[in-house]
Image 1 (spheres, one colour):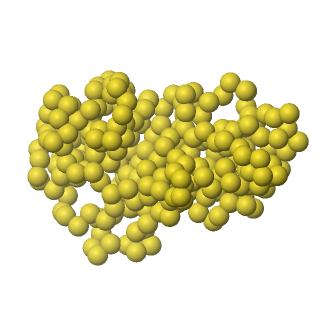
Image 2 (cartoon, rainbow, N blue to C red):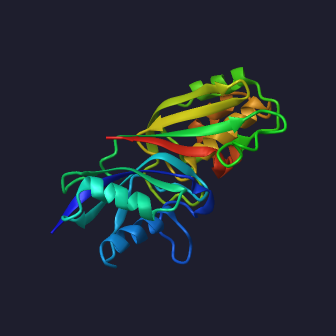
Length: 247
């Protein structure tokens, strides 16, 4: 007999080629599945994640689900996973859920945070988890650009060329900047879903606004035209963290 469990995870994505299993490459999903297989005597266990984080992207609140052996209680499975997983992947909680639960399909929203270090010459203790921005930034211009983003919109202009989904309309409810400390800021985005590289392309554009390359209105222009060529570059993966998945 088996039951479905929800697994809440946090990880440092630096050493991994993203969440999703890729043959011959280290991925977070691959490591979690390998540990669960060990707990099931070598029987493969398939894990479904709420979000397919990119190579080098981190998570504080990734959610996954899997069918596991009925004999393993939630607390036992939590402790066993913690013992087997490497230090850069942590099982925060394991909880039995209804058989119909699906980590990705049932998610109502996801929140991503992009951390920016504006200090000189950059904090080495943050380097794995932030983007060090060497340019001087106009924070008021960044705030103005962020204010133009929320709404139900076609985000094609901020999607990667690798994006394969046909429906690119998403409802983005939060786009704001928060101060972490005097020289570190975080850009927070919450939406009912995100396209490939969408957050990193939004960040790259907003940072170019802050650096004076674009006016804040460039964001509205990209949204209106769906033209990726008008947007800024894709921001580095290391600054991005999946903070929370809501159900």
